[in-house]
Length: 273
Ligand code: ADP
Ligand code: MG
Image 1 (tube, protein in one colour):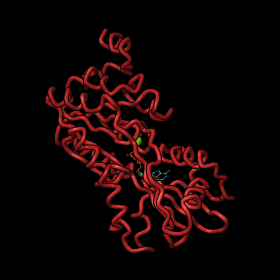
Image 2 (cartoon, helix red, strand yellow):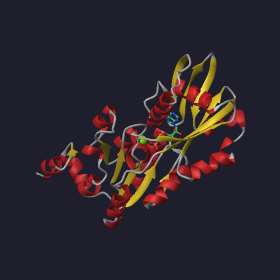
Image 3 (cartoon, protein in one colour):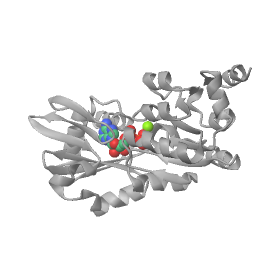
Image 4 (tube, protein in one colour):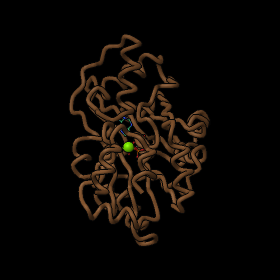
């Protein structure tokens, strides 16, 4: 009866055991990008360190055209608005939780977190402009050709409108709220503070998200992980209850999840509890 009732409210629970577990949960872990945020980032800043802004965007576009990540979609959209055409690109590779790379015009090029460039460039994350953008809740990608960073692209991804109230409701129910993200600490903290989240674990690869869920289970017993399936599907499987955004979520995530939230409505999390 409980499963049927929840189903009519847009919470699809895939079995009695998950309904049972929902009654015992004491902590909720949320993925950031695409889950707490709308997952439709918009390019907010383009900074050229070499050449022009168009050249920086064109190189990023050439690589990102092969990626499905929400950040890639933002960059593709902006590049198309700027009427740019991609350069000849081969050997595209996705570096999970870090960025993307390919051979563009015969040279190895990269878009993603600057941490990937450490050996080549020294620590770019000390760059003043870069730090400033992160501190304002933006996710900042560097664009590099071989050993040189030629520019930065920042994206802004707004929290879902119901996110803050959902966290408040979960707090009122006595839940501990944790954000797990592959994004960096500064950007993640800016968003977590805005939403009133208790704890942030940033710079996590998909394996790191599994480990984080395991630790939460040791501490709190039953734990919910809410995600969109991009770089968090293994963590959804690990959690006592894996909840996936029904529309924004990937097919693989929908399959791996124990509970699907129709309409991508975070308010369904406290409802389910
Ligand atoms: P989250 O855990 O917040 O959902 P992800 O694990 O999907 O984030 O990605 C972590 C970080 O890796 C992003 O914030 C970004 O810096 C980088 N990244 C991932 N995919 C891409 C991409 N296609 N282009 C550029 N950067 C990317
Ligand atoms: Mg995500």
